[in-house]
Length: 382
Image 1 (tube, rainbow, N blue to C red):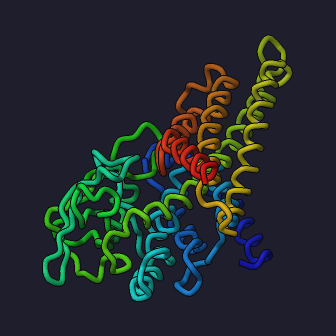
Image 2 (cartoon, rainbow, N blue to C red):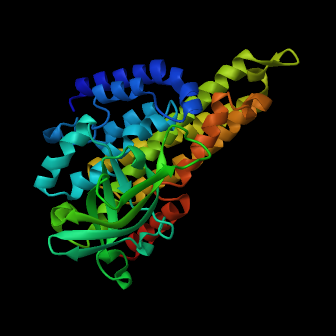
């Protein structure tokens, strides 16, 4: 986007979040859903497709623009971003990166407008951080593929029109080389979406199990129309997702620091303002320094992604540091609030629970360490 155009979008998103979405946080927490008025406004603002190329109706933002937006999304409940995150991120990018031109023309405009919602169906009971354990199968029968299996923790599945389903078209012994990805409409016979999962945090964001019982889709729904490319496609989507989640973590850390300052400067103990205690100041300073370090990492990782100089170590490093960092900031925020920080109606209490998921999805912290170390060793030995 042109700088002036992006600045306008960024300002509009910031205003919308801090005025409308923050005001609805208690409502979202209590109802466990995003109000339709917020969904409709997000749709009208183009937020369901800001990362989809302009030729298909999206805003075509760069990764650097994505992370700057994500830091604004992080100011409020993560479930708000989750509502349209799969369209822009891991699900939508499957089609952007690997779809044929006909597939892109068929589905991307609907995702960009928000008329369609897509979900990324990779995780299974025995295949989380390691997709090589994937068991869902897709068997070719004439002009169709017949899909059978089960997926777990699928974000937005209960709202989705399309599922990007990763299934094994080869033998189990093929490992990741035998995985393909299919576009499966949720109204396909044999597809069943389970009830919404009850989660520790991030209320308002829906995840569910999805079951496939001989669900039949045309061969034209094989993404890229090539078997065995699913693992690479998933990894390309997840790399962008990792930088995005890192940026979300930075945004949430800034909100936590804001709430900590608000509490520390307006509450007293023994007649002394909390902010005047040096140990409270130390916690505030540690949080600010770590948040700043995370912000710098995210912006640099996004720049390296855009210029293609590093799409391996930098995304995983940013994701690892920032998701671990926001948990430390959240813990300090609760500590600064004292007993009030443990009360469910206080924002830092909710964010403490919300933040914990960031270290798990888009690849756990442990997986990021393995990715970073393997790339380091490979580069050193080259």
